[in-house]
Structure formats: structure tokens, C-alpha cells
Image (cartoon, rainbow, N blue to C red; front, side, top):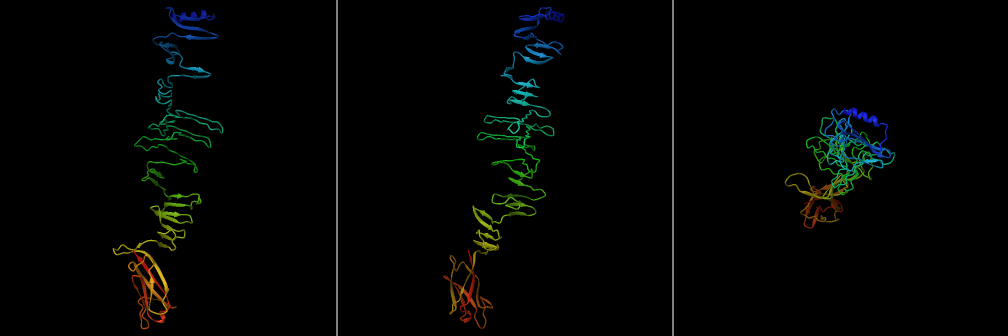
Length: 422
């Protein structure tokens, strides 16, 4: 009966014009709908509130307790929640949900979200939030995020632990030749341009991971200092030391070059291992080793080795003491030199002064020889019928060399090799 009265009433008033409103009632005089004349070609429709929905609700518009619904789905509640301003629509309070009836974020899409997020996007496949910007050669951003708090995060991504092949908390891509997939700037004195954190203590996960498919590209590129609190592996995912380099089947090593060396593979300093360990200087310069901030050993560009000297003049030159052997009576040798001169024209001896810091106690004579003629040098202990040979004696002030009082020993060259021990 109610439907019939409404239909008849609408037919009666369909061709009429009213200054105020048209109220449609049922046979019990209950208002079902009011058409309001708002003036200046504007009108509105009022549907009185009911305590329960119609049955069924399919394809029906109704007001249930102040909530406007269509086919059981809420369209609006109470007064208008949106404001129109110069073509823009906004709301000053409350959260907005798309695909959810309980938005916890200011804008929740595809799920309830979280209360401390402004925008929350969720999808089972695809992208929860997708941003794209294209503007020629200008700087543009697919997404632009700013966190102003002391511990703010401009972008926070989380990948759940599921059985899906790939989980990505955030995916960023730049199509420009000079673009950045992720560009982070920290203006604070202790902020982070980009920060990554993997919180699963047992899994193999990555706080930050980079990859490049180009042989000339960079999986990671840093300008400035870098800090790593744990072990760093190059060529290995299981570094056993602060820096662990693994070269696989080939060689592994580190090359050092600068603006003084060239940049070819053979230039600079190379430290590495193939089938042997190498410390290899590719330059025509010395290789030096030091301790206590001083050079202790040097290998010249010609291959001479100097210990205690940076300019060795022989294949091995030691400036300091040397011990040969491990016997308890082994002595430390600090110097070996040759003293030369000419015997006197008469007499049987010459006095040779000790070098500085040498004494009869730290001097050992290795050889003493006189060249009597061009046939050779005669050494100590040579005694025969015609001459008595030559010998020496270490005295407090002199090294005394003796020879026979014969013309064959007078005015002849002599040489004596002495060693200093300590």
C-alpha cells in the first residue's frame, strides 16, 4: 500500500513547481522522502533515518541511523566529511579508507594500515604505492618524502617473511640516463641519507642490497668515507676477518694506484695471491718496509736490499748488527771493512789506527795480506826459508801488522779485513 501511495503522489506532483519542498508520506502519514527547493536551480533530497535497514537491501538507497547506504554499503555518515575549495576536495579530520572500513592511517589503501603512517598501501601482487614522474630534462620525482623529526624516516619499507619468491619493502626505479632509483638527503648533523636495517637475527637478509647488470656499472657507489662495523667480504658471503677477499679460480688481490702511477693493470702496487703470495711493485721505484714510523728495510728499483739503510749499494747491505746462526756463542756483527795502505820502506811493522768506536776488544781480523810482487798476495802464516811471512797483533791503541825485514816486504801494498762485533 505504501508503494502505491508514493507512486500516485509522485505522479500528481510531477508536473508541478513548488516554492519550498515536496514531502512524500505513506498511508500512516510517515515521511518517506523530502525533495527540497534550495533556490537558484538547486535542490536537495532528504531521506529520514530509520533504525534498521530494509529487507532486502539490494539496489536500495536508505538512511540507517544517520548513515546513507546503497545496497548495504555506506556512502556517507552524518554531515559532509569533504570540503570543496577552488576545485580541490579535502577533509580536515578523520582517516580515509579505500578497500577497508577501518583505516588506521590518514589514507589506507587495500588494508587497515598503521596508526603512525600518513599513507598506507597494500596489495597482494603489484605495488602498494606507485609513483611516476616524467618531465623531460628537468629534475622530477616519482615520490618525494621528507621526515622532519629527530628520528624521522622519510621512506620506510618492510618485506614480510612469506613463501613468495620476492618480497620488496620498497621498489624504486629511474628511467632517466642520469636518474636515481633512490635519492636520499640528510640535512641533520647526524642523519642518514639512506638507511637499511635487517632485523631477522637468524636469516640471510640484507639491510641494503645493490645490483648492476652492466660490467661498467656500480652495485654501490660512495663519495666520501665508508663505515662497516662487521666483517666485509669481497667475492665471498662468509668473511672470516675484517676484510676477506676471495678471487675464486683466479687470483685475488688489491691494487693501489694514485696520480703518480699510471692506471694500467701492471702499474702501482699489487698485494695478492695466485699460487704464491705476492707483494709486487709495478713501478720503477723502491719498495720500503717500516715500523715505529720509520723505514727499516728497503728494496731499491735495481733489487738491492738495505736493512737499516734506504740506499743500499750492494745486493744486501745491513746498517746495524747481524747474527748468523742460533748457537749460544754466536756474535752480533755490526760492521766489516777493509783497511789498506803501504808498508814502510824499512823496519818490520806498521801501526794502523782503529776506526771510530772500534777497540781491540770488539775488533776481529779476518784477513791480512801483503802483495810482495805481481804474482799474488801473501797472507798471514806464510813462512819459508827465504822469508818469515806476515802477522798481526791487536793492541789497545793500534792494529799492528808485522812483516819480515826484507826488501821484498818493504814499500808493498797491504790489506787487512776487520770485523766489528757487539
